Length: 526
Image (cartoon, rainbow, N blue to C red; front, side, top):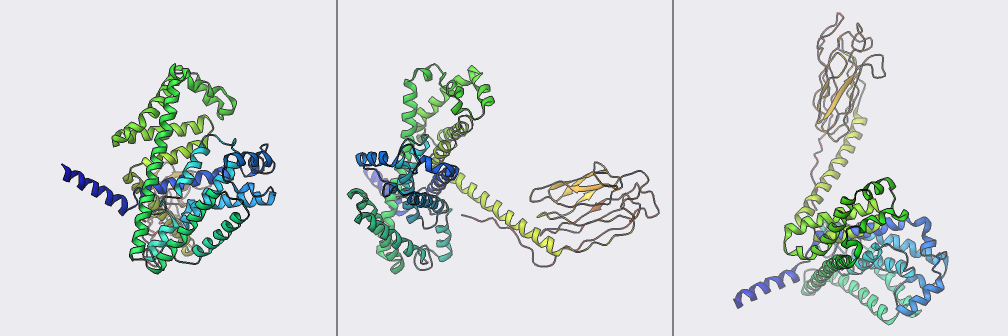
């Protein structure tokens, strides 16, 4: 028994020190929190001066008085200049964008934290609850290795072969950014803008960044680099554990406080905010929901049950995943019904640390494959426009124009006689409509997906006694336009019945495939 416990403890210790756990979960948290903050700053950009700047009701003198009492950090108290405020707001935007992209993430996470703390501590009364979540996560993300996947740093490391020259620390951007931040830190410390605690914290972060870069460049495979990796893994895993505990604490406290409220006990709590103008961006929808007492009661009780139960469901993965999906849907409903999108986005991003790794890997693969198909389709459309030449009319079958631009627009077959026919178009549909704005019938490929042929075949007769194609024969045949995608095949135009002229039933039109190599889409992997 003792040996088993020791073996299990040894395996757990090796796992905690040997790798940074939750690579995909921390990446989703990074992207979600940074994206939420960035969108909030962009949305409030026209009102930034009233919220955090010189025109705020919470004036600079009041802010200074509060900062002196709670010792909070904000660079906006370094000067009351409007220019300094604009610079600080721009740096907050830049920090959110850099962290979202995962570029020089160690430095970007510190810049992101500085931006969040500076604006939120400047005006503490501006927020909707989501600001508290972003505030906490901004601090925690500094201690995580949240750019292992889905980041520019990860891509640079893959292309360079890992740590060392040419890898994650390659280029002059890192040292330049480190030097600039060091100068700013030195100025703030000398000018007395930082308390002793904040100066020590930022100084330690700055020194660790420099040490990491130096070791990674000089001895990427040595013992010093391995020791730094082990230390970073321990800090990352501890920070991720704190984030999970924080999310559980948020839900547990919210749920147990609701249990004590009389409105939550009788199941009517949700009814009251639906009647407030501030929380009803869609009055008709809110009125419809508030008009159903049963639905209000179920949602009120359900909210309490889910929030109280979630921390306990971590012991059962399947139940946890079900409740996690329910809570994310709940926050999506709050965003729509109560008009609190940024609060909901922040909570969904925090919830993402509990998502299964397999689900995140599949979602990332699907997104990468979709992006690859989109790029391939755009290249194919460009080739189609460059390679398309004039089309000569064929006797008896009208004029079939190959104007397909779909990725797999193999054959657009439009049965003759003008109306209602539909044929396969590489996955889309080609629907013939008689007299759709032309004197003769038109057949348009009505598919807009990546496998839908796009083209017009003016060859189907529209009026009784008229030939199929203006002056180009009398066959109401089926026109086929072959696309110029990488998988385009030969088009056909078969003279198929219903002809009223001597040129009934003409032959076929063959469109040669485009020259050059065929590009194949390969799903990218993260």
